Amino acid sequence: MVDAGLCAGCGLVPPEIGLKKCRKCLNVINVCGKQWKLDNIAAGLCRCGAVKENGLSVCAKCEDAKLQLHYSDTLAAYDYYGGRYCACCGESMLEFLNIDHIAGGGNVQVRRGTLPAWLKSMGYPPGYQILCSNCNFGKSRNGNVLVNSDTLYVCDCRGGCKGNKLCEHGLTYTQRYLRRRTLATYNAYGGMECVCCGVNIPFYLTMDHGFDDGKEHRDEVGNCIATWAFQNYYPQDAGLRVMCANCNYARDDCGGVCPHRVGGYLGLYRYLPGVIGDVDGFSAEEVPRFN
Image 1 (cartoon, rainbow, N blue to C red):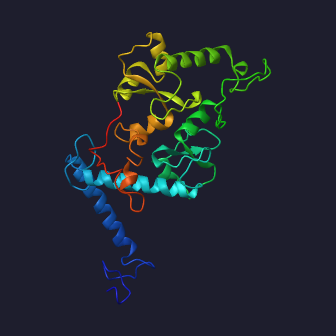
Image 2 (image 1 turned 45 degrees about the vertical axis):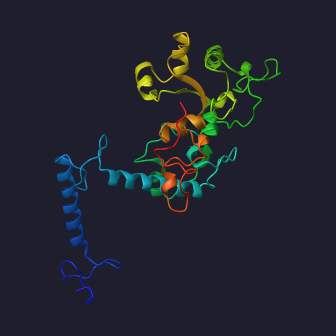
Image 3 (image 1 turned 120 degrees about the vertical axis):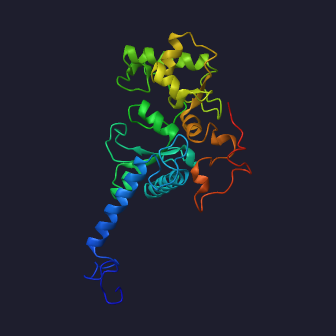
């Protein structure tokens, strides 16, 4: 039937150019496939018919395929928007990189699916760049202005920098109070530098949960951990410590281990073809934890 130029399904009409079946047969197959997936889900199985992985809504095979697609889309977006390195500081460790909205507003953008997949579906629109977590986090803290100086919080303007968030004089009373409280919290937990890599730029620093219970703690007390620590007289048994955004966020994505500790590539990037192999001889189970 295909040789005769007709649909391989019904054999009645010619298919569209590049296809083997006509549109009617393809629609029937699509409807049947969707119903089959819905029947599997209703039966408590993965959409493919396999048993679900513990704690997941799909089976291990489908979860791996989803993550592989996500990381492939992410790398494609990095390549399109300038390369696999931070546009501000040049950081090239993949676990530290992310996609930044140049004009801001990334936290309120409404889109379907993950950002890399959305960018791909939209044909990679302008207005995005690649930054490491430190530069991205510092930019959001600094009024959407990139921070790449280690001389922050030092200014001899004598009050002439109104509106400049880099200067103490440019802040409102509330902003100055919150900043000083945050800095006091950093000092109470080891000082103003990352315990992993030693970064000491205040705009880049965050509070990390060494016991890996950050989500549960934030659900209980709110997102501002520095405020909670201040109000509770800096409890030393909470597992809190100071980390830069790079180490903190990458540790969250890499099973509790900062890539700095083992040479990088702890996420699924290490399993993508042409990226990198094993991590300094460690398997995923043998990677030493940093707690």
